[in-house]
Amino acid sequence: MDEHRVAPGEKIDLERLDPADTSGVGGSESKARAQTRRAVEKLETLQELLYAEHRHALLVVLQGMDAAGKDGTIRRVFQGVNPQGVRVACFKQPTPEELDHDFLWRIHAQLPGRGQMVIFNRSHYEDVVAVRVHKLVPKHVLKRRFDEINEFERTLTQEGTTVRKFFLHISPEEQIRRLTERLQDPEKHWKFSPTDLAERRFWTKYRRAYEDVLRRTSTEESPWFVVPSDAKWYRDWVVSREIVRTLEALQMRLPGLSPAARASLKGESWATRELARRS
Image 1 (spheres, rainbow, N blue to C red):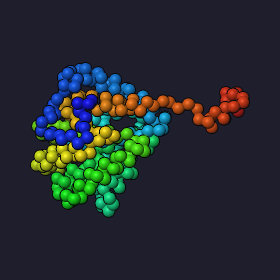
Image 2 (cartoon, rainbow, N blue to C red):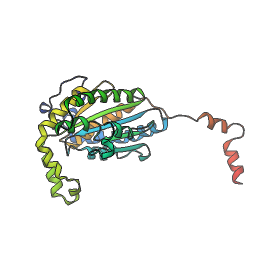
Image 3 (cartoon, rainbow, N blue to C red):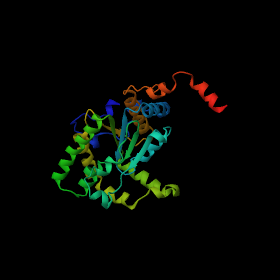
Image 4 (spheres, rainbow, N blue to C red):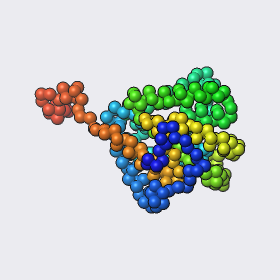
């Protein structure tokens, strides 16, 4: 996965990174799909450990151009996890109430607690990407927000939340193909928004904004991964394997009986007491 990881301060030129690249798995779709299935199965076990141990939390951030595959990634990679310990948070255009607060206010309410995994479908990075493209805030405000984001994520990691951020990198040709598919398939009409085509006019500006985000906010503790996403199967392979690797690095263990539970079992056995109660 290191070939997709952005080093702190690394200058990224997205035009020079092939969104159709599948070299990480040797271009083998069948091999990638098989490994993804195993990773998804492993993720189910690791998520149960995360929930049971109740010491760590995981925040997964998904960003990308329209139709980059954020929904598809969530559907395929997290299909086997227990909803009890996993949530998806979507961040659309801010509401009037949200605009009355600082830009991170709405983010705090959606963060994972201990034992939880939360996936952000878009995130606080909209407030340094979309607002920049459409010139909604001055440059000095944008600069300050980058500092605030880095400090915010640093605090999260210090408090026990692991952060992994994925930029789903697609080509403009693949984007228009996917948008056209939404129009041609009645079952996908609900996905299409008039703003999808309008935003394509700002492709270059969005690309530059994301390049700045990747350079300025990929840290050792909260790294960005640029995921080639024209091939959906490769995207799923990269994301699933990195999340599994991240959770395995936490070296989690199932907890034993709590002191209270042990105390309740002293003396006569629990089974004996239970039988007596039922008789």
